[in-house]
Image 1: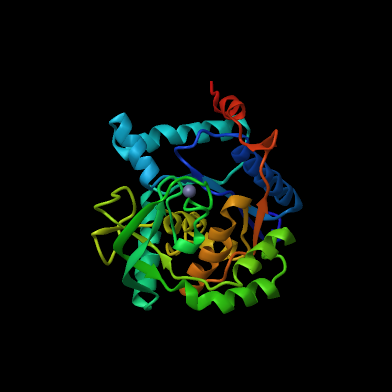
Image 2: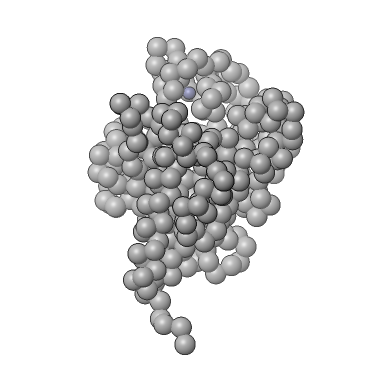
Length: 314
Ligand SMILES: [Zn+2]
């Protein structure tokens, strides 16, 4: 007879951008998640550890074009670098999700349709600034000296019709949720950072990209002229990877006590976009988002010599 489980434990890493060469930062998050999972298994928990790759968006489309290959074929080739590295590091993940898999696409479209039917998504014209490398829109006031506030590279002006998620209406709910749950965002310095960010007005989230500009994404189910914004698509892996909407038991066992391990650079998407998206479809936010710092050498993030070392395979 199987010993009685102590309960359920669910940990995730971010899904890594398939175009990236695996580096020490990826390995750090993944090894930390592996240690947690192995410990919980020893304690008698039924633990589920999910990792994977983020495969849509402009950068992948562009890289594939430059190589003259189909974007999916490009991803199929690139994903192996991550999969073989996790094998070499003896990582004990239960599943590996790729955002180009049908099981994921189905859930993204299901959630989009659900939000649309609930009146949580509307169409509007958008005027703003766009950073191609980061694939993010910025308003005039976000810009740092006219450049992208995240990567400090040049931005391009954009005017187009898009779909928006009513994220702004969840602002006070989100502040209350963060204040009531002191383990939702850890460490405390990161929690304070997000509470500080939420002092300003929260805007609605642009969740689509016109196909005339980007084709490599998940089609919006209620308007086939558009694909889904890559971040909206990517975050959903945390529920599609455990069978949300498929009727499988895993989802009801492992959600919502999820622990998302992330790097500090993707804090806003995980603690603002993600919980409000979930709230929009009536799901409870994850139990914890833990944002760690970066590995640096002489003050610089992920230097090339580390990238090269990790990417060596065979
Ligand atoms: Zn940028």
